[in-house]
Length: 155
Length: 184
Image (cartoon, rainbow over all chains, first blue to last red; front, side, top):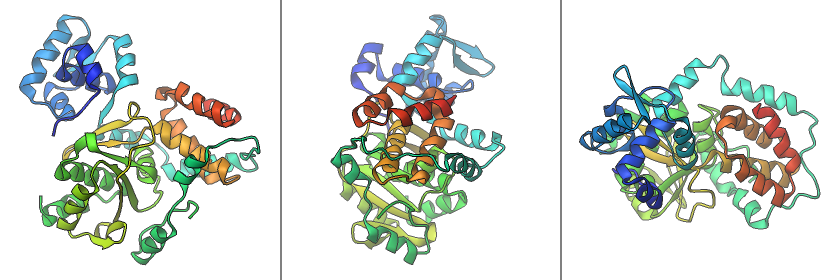
């Protein structure tokens, strides 16, 4: 299924395919093959390779082993600001590279927040935004019945 | 894809955040909503961003068409729980809300998996909601802790101007300063 991006930005860049291919490389932390760019962007490979070639010719992209990476740092920053698209394996690699679990991180953070005063009577959170935070208590009742973890948030 | 095929894929993922990712990608594809019409929001989005800080078992979705989602969930053997859909064996509980996403569309993230892509709420909006929760319900440090965790992970790529806009409007600039300090 095709990935949908901002049509105005796609029109500005020239095409949705070009924008997606560049956005995928702008968001990647490592070189990606044309095949991988096509998979992440959900566009046919045959359409991706000409865009990558043009990118290399223009000096925006560079070949790196079997893959491509974005070398124009300004364009990289710009695209990262406008489109966020990533391959989930990068998520997993980031996880395995971490020495501590998110639970340990959260424990450390909670300890550091002990005694912190977060509430301020001058805060003006709109009522509509507060309503959005409310949670139907029935939801947690069902989760408990199913032996699934309920939310600790306010019902 | 039928229930058996999806079950084989979903149950292969033992980590809950990875299970949410593949399930969301399969649901986005099978429902026809794709990345344009379905966004993972709430605690499940935090779980994905933090690579496993397990908030709760429910998956909150903002969708363009609830009927397209429920049709697929029925096909996959989910149980109708009134407004929600559950499948205990998969440890998945779906809340599909047909309403506009109140957060930023521009800052949302598309995550590509081997089974397709799905869209997830902007990390800035998740931080915003957790900060609001921590101040609106008075000293909810657990909520602010989640905001700090997200900032520690994504501080360098956040749109700080977006957060600053709401912090100024809602009077929590001091908390934003604390988040910036922790982002490094």
